Length: 127
Image (cartoon, rainbow, N blue to C red; front, side, top):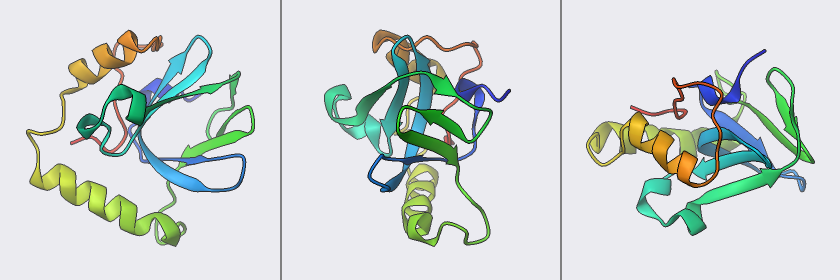
């Protein structure tokens, strides 16, 4: 079973209404799943951290309530997300010191109530 806390590939969250977005990080949480938006580190936790309540199920793709979480498709399978992905990758490459290290990200997630299943937690698409 793929543990969401260890996934380093780009993740896509599909909302119950069908909208999809890339997310930067995902962590297990006692109430479900905690995730951080792209550019989360430039905002406050109240603006960029989100909790999806419910039981996280699956090996990838994952389900939690009416939400779906999956790895971003390659070779143009997700053209509607390609620009967001390209901009995020460019940002990470051109601002390598602006993005927090994994240890700091893990500490922030824990302060927000996340309970990662492993000490090797990583954000998706991190430098």
